[in-house]
Length: 142
Ligand SMILES: [Fe+2]
Ligand SMILES: [Fe+2]
Image 1 (cartoon, rainbow, N blue to C red):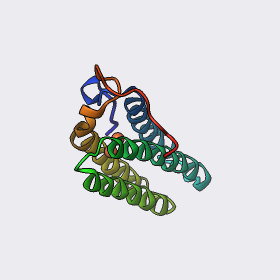
Image 2 (cartoon, rainbow, N blue to C red):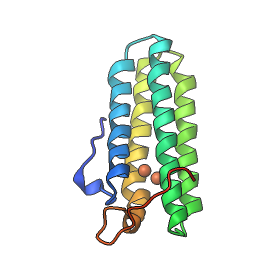
Image 3 (cartoon, rainbow, N blue to C red):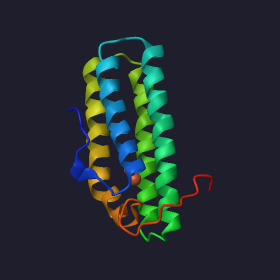
Image 4 (tube, rainbow, N blue to C red):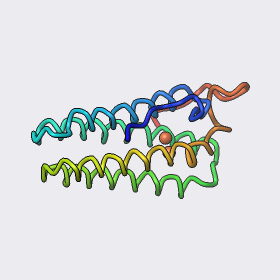
């Protein structure tokens, strides 16, 4: 199951929306590039991209939550940690080269991410920086 970003998933923050699109795209790339390719270097490259990109994205959401004193932050961060764990599992299980198993795992992670964006990230919408009157200044260095 490939997931695609949709306007309905917007959190009223262009940068976060772009990240979500990128994460969905990376997962579809992993599905199409890695499936059937029993090349660990290849698989590892795309999984590394997913690790880096999701870390950057989670960091930005964390700053947004801190900045706005979001009460659900700990629960939200726990979900991010769970995603990171699943991607680590993906890295170790992709090395066994079993294609149906790999597809199952990508499906699972894709559905999980979609659910997180729709349910948890949607809670960040009131803090979205594209909202009328929203705060544009944002310190990425925190
Ligand atoms: Fe997110
Ligand atoms: Fe999130």
